[in-house]
Length: 180
Image (cartoon, rainbow, N blue to C red):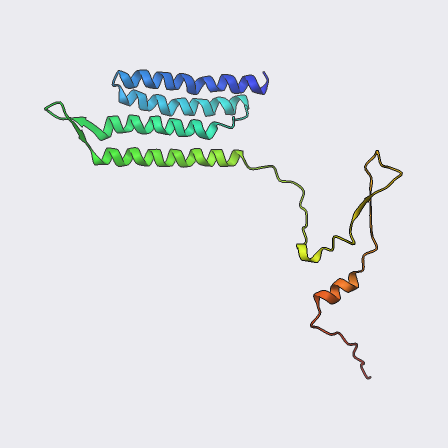
């Protein structure tokens, strides 16, 4: 099975979990909707690990969505209750728990998103400051013989002594004579 089909089959798991979550939420079975939200995400990660499927770029966004689902179910179960007159009462502990769940899942989703955009490390290059590079003397010239092959000849006639004198202009170096 190629990577695209593994990813596509893997994305069916969160889609089915969201549909089951909505059905359980409308039937007011909030505990079961909590389990569906958590198990849907865990089964998706387990599938990706077992099948060795590459996680898609939207993994962080899916984690954030499931965090919102989990937070909503937690709030409806523990943060909201009905009173004797048919009204609703808000329990502060349930609200705080719901906000904490949302905070940590959003944080984890953002970390997944930021890790997917890190470029692969390239070869280390050394860059000189702009004021130390004399671009007039180090020009690239295209040789006439190899114009189709794009071979560049460098101008290696660069006088380093003048640059050192310019760089260390306050210091004078004198040769000291040692007597034996």
